[in-house]
Length: 105
Image 1 (cartoon, rainbow, N blue to C red):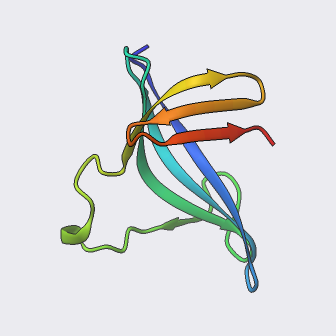
Image 2 (image 1 turned 90 degrees about the vertical axis):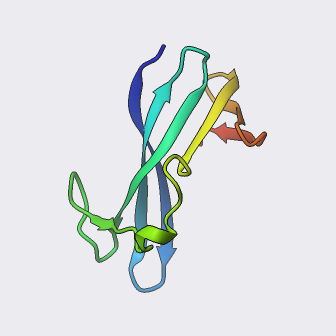
Image 3 (image 1 turned 180 degrees about the vertical axis):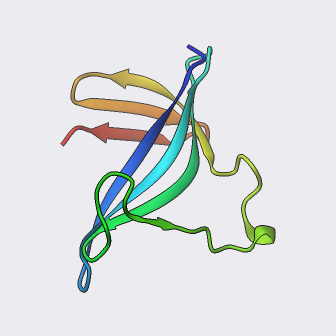
């Protein structure tokens, strides 16, 4: 424990003009000694449709908010504890007391 890594959330969106666009939301992942996982948002990449795809290609989506309006450091982070895990499902309790259920599709 106490290690760090990376994790991506991938969302595919069907857009009428661009076809299917894949958004990759990149996060750093830290695993604490207390068993809590902390993810911190790093950036977004869009690809597919009319956009370049594959590998490091893709369109990096800029943060368009002016510096003064961006969330404070750490505001793009969330912590959670896995309370159940098996080969098809993971249930986590978040630091905002939310319950997250992930199912392998």
